[in-house]
Length: 304
Image (cartoon, rainbow, N blue to C red):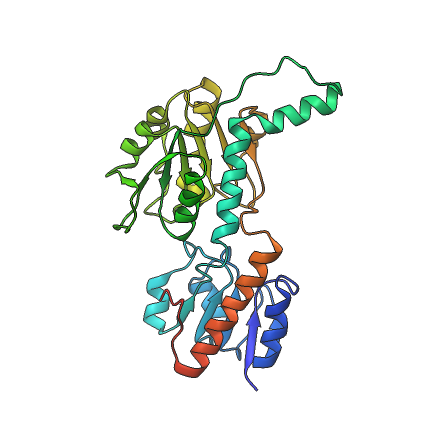
């Protein structure tokens, strides 16, 4: 009987748990454990897939990620070893896009601060700071993949003009900008929806935030390392930008303690895909990829 290594907690996706049992013997492990028999592995996108990982699981032939991102994966190493890897590319797009809009509307209308004040004062008609209208404004999206496109579709309901940057051409009607700085200068709201990794590290720096300007808002639901912490903190403290909202952080799972003192920053703990529906759909997508690999040696969501 084949052994399947599941390096995510049992119960993450009920349909995945039951589906894996039908494929073979399942071992629930952590990335610090080891196993010399399992050829199939199910992992979280937060796990680093590198030489150290493969040395603990030397028999692995196929890795199925239950998430979207693969910036912690040494793709060249997997290619060299002939290891197939897949992700759950489309299973969480709606959920992350929904959260991006929840964060965008919250910072624009001071929702978190208003809730805090009302709980303290227990009365309305307070002299609250005015927020900003979202409808009719300009939305910039850095990274127009599955998630970025879902964010853009929701903007149409707010009568917003949409612009974007992306490494490759996308068949959409939105305005494309050649650089992130040009996009930041144009838009009122800048949403980061791009992957992390060395190439994109600190793309959002002091220059980009300066271009976004004192009436500009930043939302990051992509990867934390895309935004330079020092530059963002300085920009929020000095009013270089109006406000920001983050779901992802450089150096996760810990976050920079300086963030906690900023009143014009909303933070949530990387919950973009944390819905019942996303976990169910991601589980189904993992099973689809595993079944395809076992039948053909290939998979529909293959990234390497």
